[in-house]
Image (tube, rainbow, N blue to C red; front, side, top):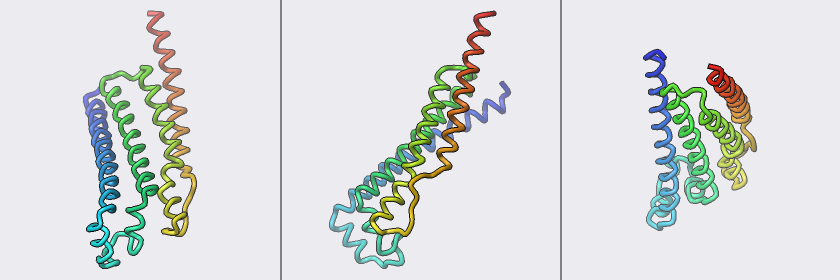
Length: 173
């Protein structure tokens, strides 16, 4: 393997590792903000603030204090974090020249499954906000995630077949 290619895999491994940490941090931060809304001091500060300075205007307190909305956001961040974690795992294997291994097939299938879940989960915050009449429109399914899931699943099947061929080649040698 060329050194630049190995460095690319190493760099991507670190990028996805960093993104995993960011998603975990954002999940915890969202839960902490929601917990802060239970403190009277916090709600009074938001109520007395200039509406134009609040991120969601007059609906800011409703949005950040909604347990369903916050939990759907946390679930999304956790799912994105899981996708980043498995992508990191995949690039770590590529860096170590472990390409035709069963672990990569399993990892690709996990990423495909997570992308299918994200197809619905990524729309939950908007759906909840729409149901609470905080925003005007929402969507139940993000087709982009479905397409990506199908592509990753197809790649996992190709990788699975390549693993079988690699194993057969090792046996004949």
